[in-house]
Length: 408
Ligand SMILES: CC(C)(COP(=O)(O)OP(=O)(O)OC[C@H]1O[C@@H](n2cnc3c(N)ncnc32)[C@H](O)[C@@H]1OP(=O)(O)O)[C@@H](O)C(=O)NCCC(=O)NCCSC(=O)CCS(=O)O
Ligand SMILES: Cc1cc2nc3c(=O)[nH]c(=O)nc-3n(C[C@H](O)[C@H](O)[C@H](O)COP(=O)(O)OP(=O)(O)OC[C@H]3O[C@@H](n4cnc5c(N)ncnc54)[C@H](O)[C@@H]3O)c2cc1C
Image 1: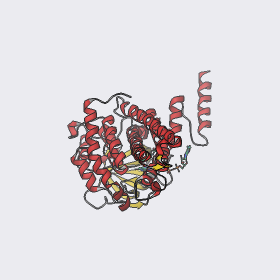
Image 2: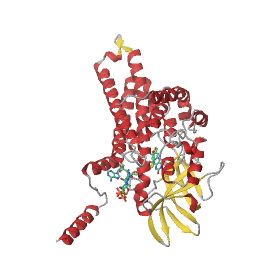
Image 3: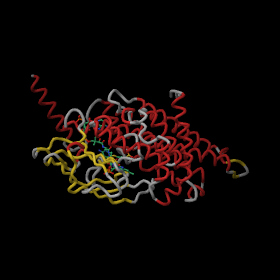
Image 4: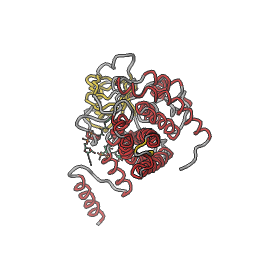
């Protein structure tokens, strides 16, 4: 792993200092299930929202790697704050900064720099892993677009101001592909035509997850995000940007596992049984050793993915998927082992270990499940499409046969 530059180390140390305040409120946020607005204001003042916004739009123009250093520190202290730092620096904001018009960039930059955590709306009740099967439609009507559909598990639904909605583009009565539609909430009420209903979740309880329904939602043409390559390639280009958020999610998994490990290390040396620190029992010493190895290995993959941001400015798709799979699986294992080190005390809601276990669970599901991302890794290393539909391979075989016939 590369050493940090002096500027990177300073940024991480500054985040670590502010994250101490996040640690102090993490249990209360979990219990109240309220979005931690006071902490978000603190993160905004300290300049951790909109880190990746270029200087010309008023941000500091830092890299994905810089953002990862900050996210890990917040996630270690409070995983909800870690996720806020992800969406304020990656995902929707990354896509708009890459593909948006100057006016769209201005709006998006103002949102995150003033403390908004944008929402990205991809998943639907019937289109989870199979996201390209989404049914939400954006139909061209005059100089605007009418959006109809249902999204689910939308992080920040009901509190976010900036929304990036993925929808099927219907123009001149024809389906053209998948595009991005920017919806900005002004004030307390949801935008007209958009409603959010909170979903109670297992972990990360201070972060609202919501079903979002769109009926009669009108988006002006000026708020359509048009990635290069046309609508037919729209989903792929939007996913290029989403690879940044996958690295962010991996970083939160890494950070919270590292936080749980810190607690376990301390407890293993403080707690005595049979007249000696429990850390002296080989069963626990090796457990701690394995935890430290897994955390370091995950950090290496996360850093590599964050540093891979290529000429389009986004992290590499393969590196992002590899880091996310590794960190998500690792966080589930490490947080459970850390709770084990604490024994019964770890099972109590009076200390943070059970929260770490609950918070860790989502990363193998959200942002591409551990199974789907393994298929993405396999596709990249094999250099071939591995279709997931029943007729997918038959179609490839038919295309190959047709190509062979044409070549004869
Ligand atoms: C991609 C999948 C939805 C599989 O669907 P398909 O088999 O229909 O799609 P593909 O043919 O594989 O892809 C279509 C198109 O997109 C390009 N693509 C796909 N993934 C990427 C990527 N990661 N980076 C770049 N490009 C990508 C692919 O090359 C095709 O492009 P062309 O048309 O050839 O140009 C499925 O594999 C999948 O990813 N499912 C997971 C969906 C997901 O991640 N949802 C996240 C929702 S947001 C969220 O959960 C937030 C949580 S958080 O805290 O961050
Ligand atoms: C806390 C949380 C936050 C989220 N935030 C957002 C958000 O902000 N925006 C958003 O758009 N979405 C969000 N999501 C949704 C998330 O992206 C989806 O949950 C995820 O893509 C999986 O979809 P699904 O839950 O419908 O599972 P399904 O796709 O129904 O999968 C169910 C099971 O089948 C497996 N499976 C499915 N297909 C395959 C396959 N081809 N090969 C092998 N196994 C397969 C899966 O791995 C999983 O184990 C969030 C989810 C959670 C839990």
